[in-house]
Amino acid sequence: MATVLVVEDDEYVRSAIIQELSRRRHAVRSAGRALDALREITQHPPDAVILDLGLPDLDGSEALKMVRSVSSVPVIVATARDDEAEIVRLLQAGADDYLVKPFSGDHLNARLEAVLRRARPAGPSKVVRAGGLAVDLDRREATVDGVPLTLTRREFDLLAYLAARADRVVSRKELLAEVWQQSYGDDQTIDVHLSWLRRKLGESASAPRYLHTVRGVGVMLVTPR
Image (cartoon, rainbow, N blue to C red; front, top):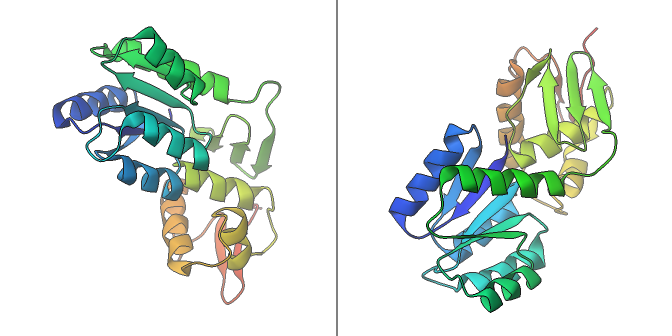
């Protein structure tokens, strides 16, 4: 499973791609314009991007350059252009793969799985454990009591950062700096992501198992005894 951003202005094509990826249990977000896609990538970083070239506000090749200026996320270009020189230019500009329209759901999924495999680090994975929680930092996978968690990229980053510092209070300022890469920000952003994480961990703020708020200080991931 992965978080995939589909950038496609054609509503019918976008809906079909979302349906295919969702059927394979990927978490899918979408955008119909290049600038909306860039906002999504910076605010909610996905695991991969499916990028159409014929966008209404910016040509996809220019959008690709802008994506590469802010992120190393794997990008699969979806295009009706089958000119070899154009495809080579896109790959040289930073695309990880391409699909010529029309394509099947199976073909899309195979290409997606291939770029995700290449994006994962080779070698043995580093796993952080706290009680029944296991966070695989390299594979970006987490389980609680053996049950896989479906997390967005930001949720995983937050959980991994706290798990690696289990039983230590982490300040909100540190979380903003290290997880969000921001020197300042709204505490509500952290609270919202903590709320989502708690729900997926099967707990609540009033009855926490792992994620404990230390009022006026920060957050601590506690190893259950």
